[in-house]
Length: 145
Image (cartoon, rainbow, N blue to C red; front, side, top):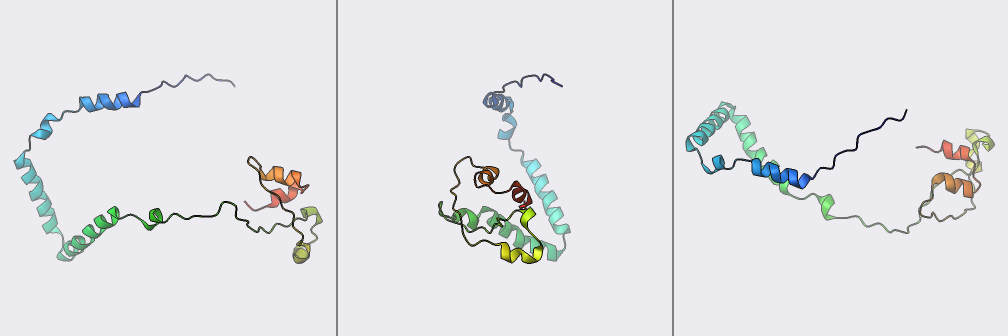
């Protein structure tokens, strides 16, 4: 069934952000209510003193360590791994088709020692490589995912 869909409206996200920014009321941020801050501080101090002494000591040590670790860069970002672009990799592919394979016990006998080189071109698929080299498609389907 062919159902028509409405075209999605194009949204100017920059303008939406500007509108939201202008709608914010910054006037109440300028006035610092010290009584409210002291209430918050007193609540936090009350919660802190309710904790057992061992928990307070552990938190006093772990919280700064976690904060420092959050701001330190990881080793993966510092050391990029450089691999050569044209490096040859040996891949063991059994070139005998599945219909030609007698059993699992004779697999060692089927491995061919003569190699055919093929340079993969841009846009090549594995199926196209099999077709151009006259390899059976059953072997392509039998490859592990």
